[in-house]
Image 1 (cartoon, rainbow, N blue to C red):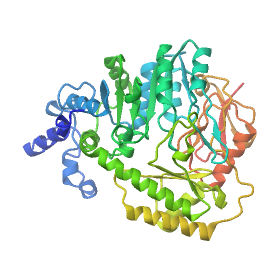
Image 2: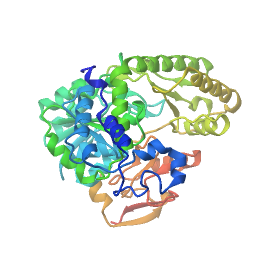
Image 3: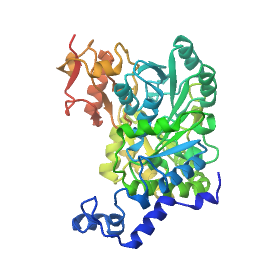
Image 4: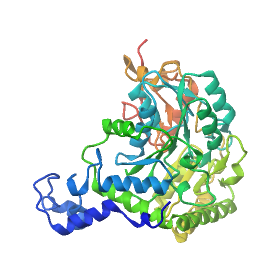
Length: 483
């Protein structure tokens, strides 16, 4: 990485030059630098509204960049150690989908773990690729799925010689990492692309002592959620490309779905945040790791909780662990993670990232302070004293291995009927059912609905999980194939 070159932020600098010229706007957006919408100016400010502009020659065009956006992409590629990068304004969902759509066509097989984000399976619905799931091991106590074993991936490759790609979570939402280098080596030996969903791994590129990044491991593409641990504005992301992937074709794929009216607020935030991490990321993420380890120790000393970390590593299904993920097992208190989530928000004004059936996740990154950690630890200690109860009868699983009978695209577009959830056992699901976050489907199109899955859905609803993906917004009915 060229540190001196990384001091530049070409999109931001171009916007500053544009702002000083006081150009008279006879283009979109219609608020005309905020003059037409004073209430929005009151919320966002003159400076923000003044650079909410449309593509024009001095500011380049995201769909076909030739100047400042192209330079920003080259700087990002340099910072992340990639062959090329793309600035994405549709969230990492758009990055993941572009990555899958670039590698797969209708009928192609892609090897992947089932505990992927819904955006991955959405991409399969769009392009008609067929998933070959490597079902990860479960940690029975914690109720979470672990990483992909190298032996499992190799077996899937040998059994599916017509597969075109392998997709790996790096890391999972819970901080679990697979042996990415070995997976890349085996996949490349058999001519498969390796795609990495790094929605939660931006910091791997800039911190020290963290798991290997996708580009360093030799992956062909990676979707990097810059707005999560990287500090850019929500909805901004990078798609990184490596090796011999055709970057011009990837841009064509991106332009199938990406907006032609990209927000310069998002683009500038990517530009500035990339510069920030390139120049100061090592020191910032060192502090994040220190805060996380301090919090982990304090929470484990309370009793009743288990904040897990590198002690999870076993060299196979947990090859490495992202210590910045402050994930805490709560079920021994007799409390589901979502219940602790709600108590923290409602009683202590603390908003954490997620609560599932067994765990909570406090997402730590470059903006966190020690005093905030102390407040979280104190609140958890209070909850342990005040709310602890008998855990008898609590469900334990975050992930249930699916039975896939129909490709996602075929099931999603099939003739369907709507049935009450309790009456769907044995039917083939035509839609998604998930708790969000983490956004890992409990059910995806083409999967058999089992009694265990029905019980999980009803239990998650009862505990207060935010359920999504179904046509019925109340999640009282499911769409199933009309056979």
